[in-house]
Length: 223
Image (cartoon, rainbow, N blue to C red; front, side, top):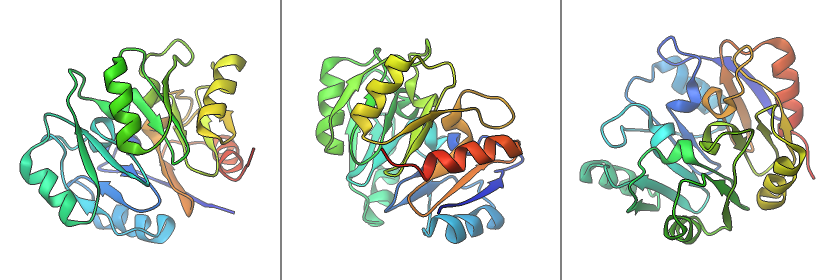
């Protein structure tokens, strides 16, 4: 059973906007305080890499990754690339006109979905870099699918207004069960309020008790 804790980063409950977490690595911005990093150690069992991406603290909005590596936008600075590579992270730069990749793509180690805004070339490169099948799909009316779905290799959560057809397709691609729910007291932008891996789950500090129960059940479920 996964541990789950509520936390915030610099007085914000939108922790998913600031971090990239997979089973092998975690990236957090320089604004992360000691308590935040302590809980990443305790719950996710990871030593975070502290850096910006493309000069921004919102690394969770700019990059997307899984156990096979990290994909970043072409705006990234060379020193940021070098820092990530020095930490042993496989990193690829996507040459696309879109830069907020974390908003546009949701993946785990088994598959993923991407915004219909991305070109076929972008999808092909993302699939190649991350070693998985990725297809374009809109979720609950959103093209920014990276904001409305979050999954590990054990389970995941998705915007509660998702249609059953959309949910089934996303589950087929990512090969985990996805449960509709909200986070941070009613937000359907679930990725913005969570970071998780197979070890544990951290959610935004505004997340309610009923939301916590649904989220924990979702990440402990298997297809």
